[in-house]
Image (tube, rainbow, N blue to C red; front, side):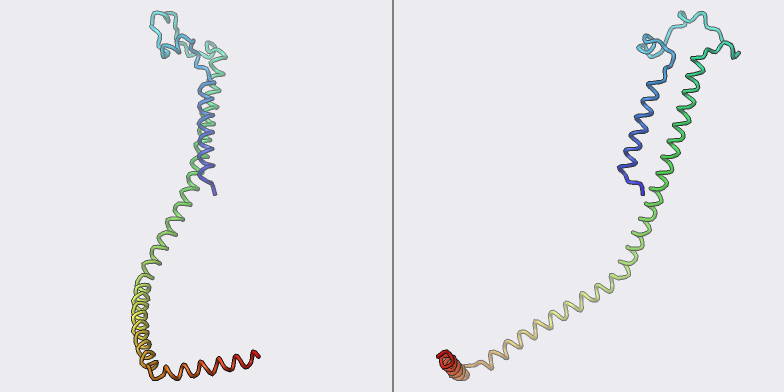
Length: 167
C-alpha cells in the first residue's frame, strides 16, 4: 500500500520537475521583455507579418513546440499516475471506513451486555461486603473472653513441645 510519505515525496518530485521544465523551456523573449513582464509596445513590432505557411516557421519555434507538447504529455502522465495513487488511497480509506462502521455496530450490540455485567458485579460486590461484616461479627462472638484462657494454655503447650524437641 502507498504510504503518505511516499505520496508527498512523489508530489514534491513532480512539482520540482514541473518547475524545472517551465524554467528550462525558453519562451523566445529577450531578457528585457522578461523584466517588463513580456509586454512590448506595438511601435517596436511594426514589421510583424502573420503567415500560416509552414515555410515561415523557424526550427527553434518547432523545437520549442515539440518540447512543450512533450512536457504536456509528461504532465498528463504524471497526473494520471497521481490519480491512480489517489484511487488506491481512496480504496484504503473506504475499507477503513467500513471496518470502523462494523466496529461501531459491534460496540452498540455489546453495550447492553456490558451494562448487565456491570450491574451484576456491583450486586456481587455488595453481597460480599455484607458477608464479610457478618463473618467478622461471628468471629468476634466466638473469640470472647472465656476462650482467652484456652488460647494461653494451648500456646504454653506448643512452646513446651518446641523446647523439648530442641534439646
